[in-house]
Image (cartoon, rainbow, N blue to C red):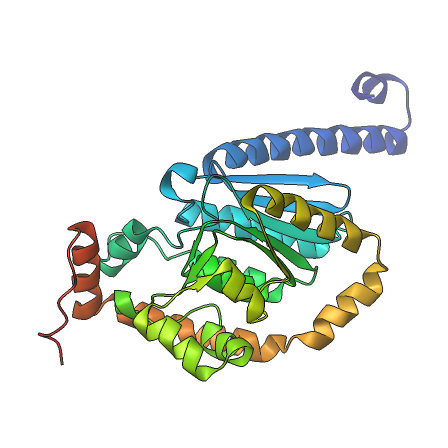
Length: 295
């Protein structure tokens, strides 16, 4: 087209050819940038789309899938894109190895508290999973700690392994609940049980999570991902408009996002306290934290 444009075609046709060529070039550049971002940003998050299901897999098994800033960005982008991608009808979240997720990487917390790191990207991920319009299915095995547990409150179907252990030990780290869990968890399992989980660090087994209504099914570890994938595929066969409307009616999204904002401000405030510093130091030094000097 470029040659013909310069020699024999009318300007209007040549302009179209030139526009198409530029568009192709820009698409190629964009794809190259996207590929580089995939390698650098989502090294520990695997994204796969097939048969209407978008899978987001935490892939840092050597660290129990503890979530870093880069992992949060990759997962948040996938969730945000799922809202506008018509080929995505369902989102499935899983983790590689023997744990679903050990929660936020404490190294990021410590660096942020010391003013040595960028803004925590956990909030972007939390907002994304709290406002995703498509149904979300989770496959949970082993540890689900902190945000690894609270994100399940935003999943529409949850399948847990019999070895699953859900904990939200925010107070043990001198922090505050996040992901609107201070509102959603008591509503699901009652104030007393939720308070014990937050403040005493009490956990739930997979069977207990199922009995309390936090999970749809408990199964042997080797069957959990298959059960979640089967459920996700079944959802793709349902009328998408009806599915989306049902989810919207069942969730008070505005109230959830408002609570997330409130929690986020308090969480960031707590991160910079002496109590939090003591908690992080104790964790890194493998000793019990001593909060007796704080009043």
